[in-house]
Length: 53
Ligand SMILES: [Zn+2]
Ligand SMILES: [Zn+2]
Image (cartoon, rainbow, N blue to C red; front, side, top):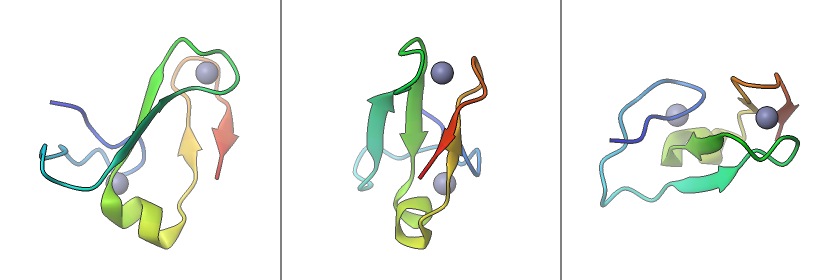
């Protein structure tokens, strides 16, 4: 199960979430849950430390 990169919440498959590779290093898949998208919370790449909106 994927986990949200910000709040560590486990994502349920039916939930509206986004998943994309880190724009900086591309080596990590960033997952953001619906809530974190709504609040516009930033994400942080665990590999390179890149943060973004
Ligand atoms: Zn979240
Ligand atoms: Zn990265």
